[in-house]
Length: 310
Image (cartoon, rainbow, N blue to C red; front, side, top):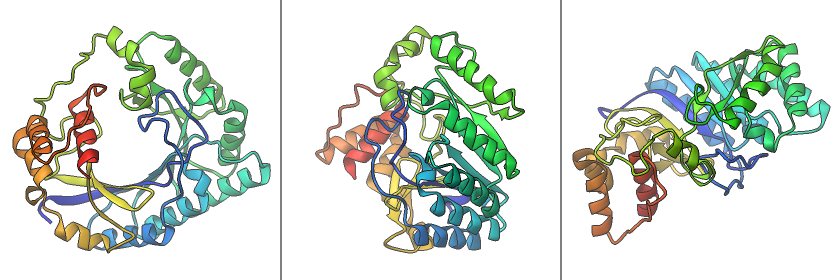
């Protein structure tokens, strides 16, 4: 357990999404089923037996296309005494008023206590703001702890048309007394790299990634030998940062963790001992060549190579 000391679990509920946003790091491939509910619930319970889990998050795709699964995961987290139970949603999963009301009630009953509603210029290119407002009002009626959660191009202080529109949209919600989170700065990967690269070039960000940075130094990452958060993909794959280490549909999560040793996994060992340059050398020795010309960070290069090796 030396390399794993968990305090957070993140469930990607589905790749399917009700939007096709220009800033999405996952690109255009946004279809597929939902995570196995029984396996996900068991995973929460088993991890809570061994670790002091502080936070469980569900996201997507659009997770509320599988709202019942979301609610069961968070109910399990609540019953295990996990204090933070977080959901990120774009708020558009149905046009049926009764279904919207039902889901808002179920989320509150299941114990979701930090609901982040994605509102920004990108989501609203595809998602009608009226439907998101309707869902927000239903959540407020049921006493949900709700914040709007924007995505910023480069950062909030950068002056561009997308950020200006995001600020206008946020005001619709803040005028209703709904607080806004700090949001997140868009990571230039996937669709964002395709559609928004000019904004990052204009900001002075280097076009070629610095491959000398150590493993775990990039935003939303951590070293493979100091894992505090596990990500679960919709297909059940278990990810320690960019490395897939097992699948909850095939074996117990604690067995996966007990087996995990990044220094015994050639790709992970290469990354930890020699950084991304050594990972590239290892991949070539294994006959795997990956086009990383569109990557703007060492993290993006690492993820592409790990996918190519899997």
